Length: 635
Image (tube, rainbow, N blue to C red; front, side, top):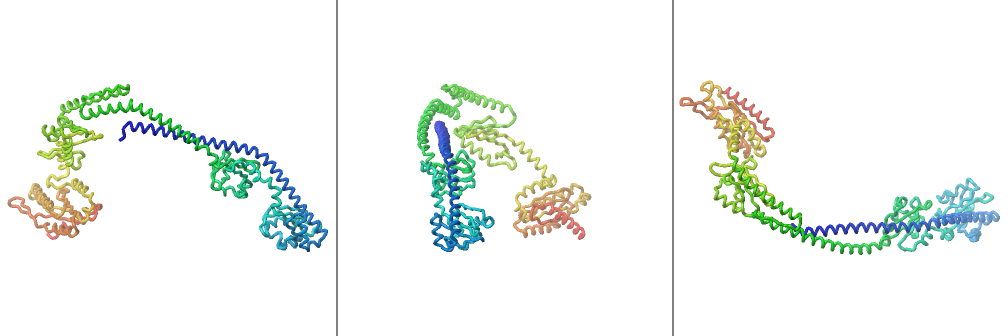
């Protein structure tokens, strides 16, 4: 067990450690929130600068794309007019390639009225139709409406899955369809400076910051990192639910790196600014280290100051009181305590002194009261740390000790404990807390001990008369007064105790016995002779049985015999055979001139389990009556 000084020191250091930890955690959380707010504010400023630029960019991009679409259609119209003016060009691959080069297109394809390529700059595409693939199927409406002029967005073509932008229209004479194709790098050269990724790269001053533009379907349509463009945001670690709904920023891991991201919706696109957390929180470790050192210094100083004061004015005074109490505990009840360093200790001293005085008064009163009663009650007490025993007047008498022996034991605690333990080793069955003291006559006492942290308080009560009266009542209750055998209640009580050990009934039998001729003896010789007759049968049955047996008189001329705990079934059967042998071989001398045979009828039932006892009893009773009838017929 730790001393108070240690506990106070430990408590102070524990409390200060907890307080410092709480302060550090709170400051850390505040710092994290501050840095996050700074990131949100800086992101808002960037978004404010970026929003008009993106809007202008979108307008410029749409104008450029529309202008380029018109250029594509005009190129198709030029090719159509050239071919219409010189139809023989359709038969010359070189002429068609020359036309393509002169108007700066990459492919020319000529379709017939069924939508099949029959000539052009790329013979490998000949015989492809508008039904050859999804990309070519875009132009199929031309077959049903010759006024249409179609321009397709940049799409992988059907033949080679190569990114191309195609435009197509009918010739004015309606005899063929002209389709021209341009590779996307020609378009990208025109629109490169209007792409979101290019704009983001102009805002990226910090290399730890990444910008994203995400469409409503989760597709990344722009980023300063071109590897992320056209990927689904979830694939790189951006949760679209947070992107679309979390306006206060959120943490995520992008391509294996932790980021804090802030997104804002501009038009139909979500623009985001993601800062690497190691860059965002780079100042926090220095701040926390400085704060921790300061708080630890303050906490150590305060803890030492408080504990020194507590030790001087509390712990040391308690130690002085403990020394006084130890003296009182060891039996010096005249010791007094006088600590006046504070009001509380002064009051405590007075209360302890009053308590000791009260104990002394109580002991005197208890001894006086017990001496005035007729009850034999003794009290003893001792403390493990002392050798002496205190006891009241009647204690030696109850413990069957003379005064000299008691005085010797009271001076040696270990001998006294040994004496009490010897008594406790002789408990009375079915009597809780009652023990027998050997001697003439035997005496019975009740002992109750309370051990409270080494302080033992014992009470001894002489219950000899009470126990003897109870035992006499039990005998009169359970024993048949005529024969000395168990009566019905005593038999059932004994059987109940035996039932706790089922193994006793593995080889056992219940026997019902009825005395023959009792009525005739009573009528002829009188009931006194009939009682002698019953006693003789009782004695015969009491002595029967090689192993354990239990015998009872159920009333009148009927007896009950339980044979149990035989080693095997053969021994049990032999005992039952012996019972038959003594059935008619014994005689009783009623008086000098009268000698009669001692006869009885019986029936038995072999028992395997005590649980079906009543069934076996009925079966044995039935067998007994059959035996009685048979014997009467043989007489």
